Figure 1 (cartoon, one colour):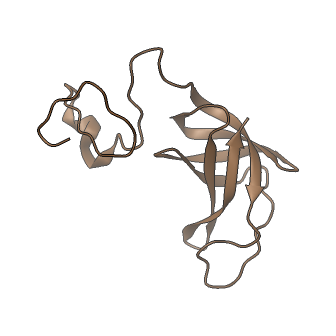
Figure 2: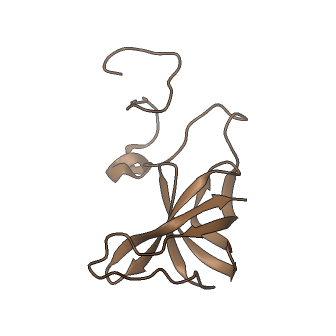
Length: 133
């Protein structure tokens, strides 16, 4: 917002917020993807959730045309939830539903969409999306 002070902000722009946090906590974008709000106004924080999974037919960005295989139990997946990125370990995979435990918790609502990526070779590749149920 430049040098202007504002009382309210909305998604879709960049905003800087001055805090009294220890700079060691904020270095190297350590708080990237975090959500800020008044207590009681934010969606729940999830350490684990269940996704209704929608996989693509082909892997996005791979050199060869690779078909997307079904998600498997114990598989690590990269999840993008809003602006947050975390790894989820699949604890149960059946049909189009996957239950996951998250390495880093995320703030989201039921019904939010989550981008799902799988490690293919040395890179994470987009394979589909999920809806938090």
